[in-house]
Image (cartoon, rainbow over all chains, first blue to last red; front, side):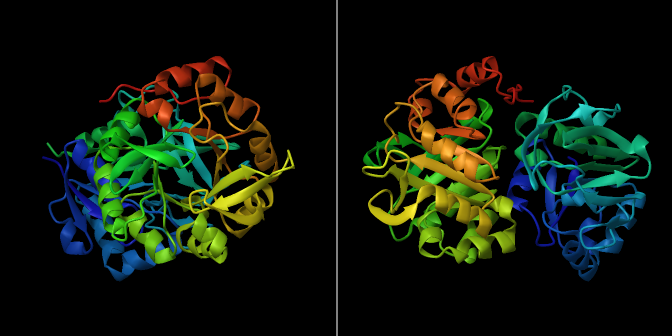
Length: 204
Length: 254
């Protein structure tokens, strides 16, 4: 069974994510310190709110170093919403540094008609990646955010979503996967994406 | 398309104009069924009066979050950020405040600052004002008390204070299945720039189309027509799609 360390740093709906990951067959352990990441096939980083407080908590718990170390040891990083944004170098939101596992920054969604962007919206596939296997073009997922990532390497963008402008809604690069929406709240399509991520995490 | 489950003491109940309650089943089971059938969100409104309802409600929210993978909004009796936090931690995505926000409007701001405005839904029960066809009064405590507030003014003020969404119920139409109060919807959707959910009066797919196309609502909420299986979520979505309203298609479960 694929073991998922679910990072709990006091930001985010742990209940829904835990149940959704369990539903797709993962063995979920809540992780609050570096030692909890040992043996995990995947590290799920959820989160709502701003990058600054999130990074401060991750540093205080020793996770800001332990997470990149676990990823370089082969664990899959699954970033959800703010967890996806934390992959990047910096956020414009409060000038906070991220985990910098990917080049690029996080900015307020350009030309958005309404912020926060809350509700169901469609994924447009711009790349092919197993994390979207079985997910049809224009599948709707559930979003709650005001900021979005701008990866330096555009080839990491697997899907985009339109809200005023277009922003990356799914990114993948090596063992790093990020989704800007909430797969645990996106019905059957969300569960499929989580199932794909859990499958990708399993180490042969 | 949002099915609403009025819950009391952990069970689903549905009455007409907030009275004549009847038992309609287990909320968590119904919510999961609606989510699989294509509901875009689930709303629980806790109308129970029992003193120990908090525990029962939190338990229900947690049980629902285990098997329902669409957003969940919970309302009823939340009077403080601490109570809101407990409901969110149990697995709700948003909390609706109604009476408590009227009594203490600053509550909206406190909750929005702490949890983000997208978590704060202000639920407004509106009743047409006697003698004034284009005015609606805000009523509270399940429609028993009037407040002296004008519904359109209150909606505007609630958004100014931090509400991320307005759940607008017509008490005149609630449970009657005679269609939404379109003039009320129009007045409120024109006054605020956050999503407005239409509630009260859904009788069939045509009413939902009207609430969105004519009323300007961003989503429609209904209870009894789904609980009694008068209409399926799929049939309502088909009618909306046929009228040119964008709807989320319902995928098969993996």
